[in-house]
Length: 151
Image 1 (cartoon, rainbow, N blue to C red):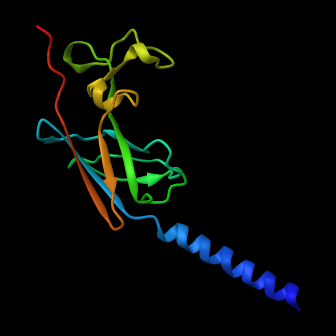
Image 2 (cartoon, rainbow, N blue to C red):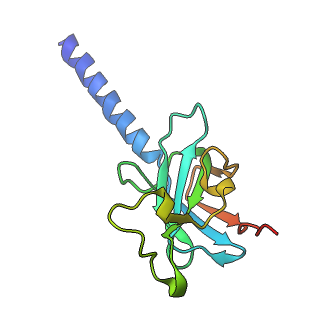
């Protein structure tokens, strides 16, 4: 009899804990602009700050620069906390007239891809973009500046 009660209490605790972890997820939307214009088709990853047990999330921006963030299991939202943002947008290198370089055949490697976002935003090691996901629905505005052309 006592064993059953203990088992019921443990089971109830597990269900409650599972419910709490799900409810800790909050909707997260990002809006990415570059030089004030929406950045379409950019990949945005939010990585939890060092030491956090939260999972990372990602999304791809639409024509208005907006992306809904989902975790690795496809669940929309993230746990509240601080996250480092990494934003990248890659395209195949093109030749005159915007035609894909004819030397690119078969598998695409790093030399045939052009990153359109400065490495200070697109490289996880260099990014200093840090944002907080609040306890409720959170919208993060990521304002980027284009790469300065070298003279």
